[in-house]
Structure formats: C-alpha cells, structure tokens
Length: 86
Image 1 (cartoon, rainbow, N blue to C red):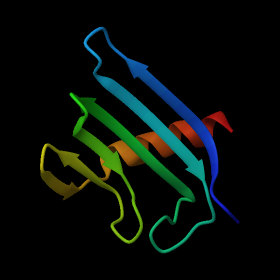
Image 2 (cartoon, rainbow, N blue to C red):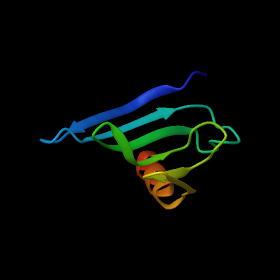
Image 3 (cartoon, one colour):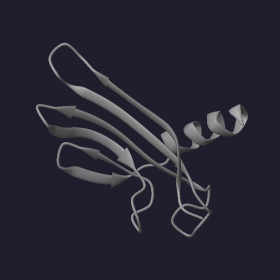
Image 4 (cartoon, rainbow, N blue to C red):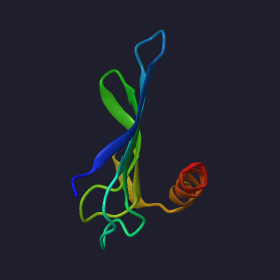
C-alpha cells in the first residue's frame, strides 16, 4: 500500500513564516507500527527551525534548529486524536 495523504495544512503569517502539517496513512511497519507517517514544520526565512517527523528508519523525532532527538509525547497525542476521529 502506498502512503495516502489524509491531512495537509499550511499556514503563512504576515512575515512569511510557515507552519505546515502533513499526515499520511500507511501500512504498519517496524518504523511506523501505528501506520502513520507525518511531518510537522515551522519554517522561518526558508529554514526549518522546528520540526517533528518519523522519516524512514529514524522513528519519531524532533528537530529544534540543528539538534535532532527522539520524541514520543506528541506522537501518542496525535494518534489518540486521529484514532478517536476515525
């Protein structure tokens, strides 16, 4: 099954900063046992300064400026909300 985009929201403020959210439904896998792929980003002057995603073979993690670290809390909240909505 190819990942299916189920949510895409992009907002741009008056100064051009961007908040973008993408959520895909996919088959559960070792990297994505919950069956979701996601990307949340805050972009300032064309540079991602904050991001949350679960890119291939990296699992759930966040980016704050140039620092990347594992992250779980927002993911469980996101999936709980999505599952209650379905």
